Image (cartoon, rainbow, N blue to C red; front, side, top):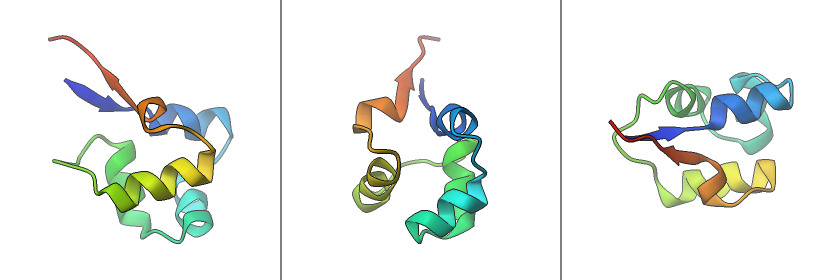
Length: 67
C-alpha cells in the first residue's frame, strides 16, 4: 500500500495542514485529504505544489508499505 508521508513532514516542520494550504495556495481540504491518506490519486499539479513548498522530491512524499 502506498501511504502519504506529508503528515510526518508537517510534524517535522511544526506546521499544520492549514499553514501548508496557505503557503502553497491549495485548498485546505485537499491538504487534509493527503495527510489523512484519504485520496484515490494525486494530481501532478498537487504533487508539484507540495514538493515546491517542502523543497522535496515526489518520492519523499510517499512510501510503500507491503501488506
